[in-house]
Image 1 (cartoon, rainbow, N blue to C red):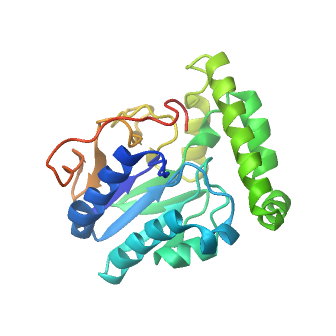
Image 2 (image 1 turned 90 degrees about the vertical axis):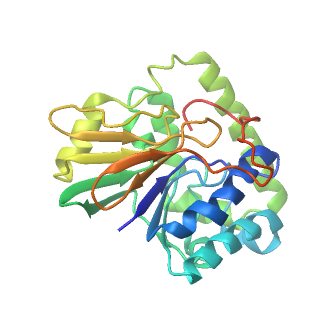
Length: 256
């Protein structure tokens, strides 16, 4: 089985470079997989599935996933901190299955825990407080009921506050906490963890006999993670149509 793990694409209309990288990936690399796991922040912002009918850009993304799923590739999508309002309608449009906040799978006989990873950044107390509020079902219901213009205004404010918070917060505080990692893996009796969010790609970080694989965001040139049925490998991003590597605009670099 060939499984591809990606996260933190942060796709949005303003970032043509990442979109080109995504288009190339979906055309050349994605069809080689049996299953693709998107571990959060597929979109740079998502304001609720009610937006889907009037959002041509999002419809383009869902159509690409749908075509892939119709070719027999299984697709699983986890919510991230940027697109936590993704719901069943969006997943259905992609031909995908939504993942729980923490999902346990078997890879080569190893209990492997998948998550976006923002819940591991417990040293960032202010972020965790906001996260608990925003992830409540009541907030999701309210958010989906708001007029489109209000949603865009709220999203813009959240992005501004997020940028200010990152600028004023030490990088180490926004990284995954070692005790939180151990607690999550212990609770699931897992010996391998794969996550994104921190934008600090690193692989096979051994601690207490466990594996930890941190996925790259798509604005860096680190590549994506593949399981070939036997072992992991980091694959370089595919080339774009003009055979050049993609790099450029990074909407917000650190910490999701």
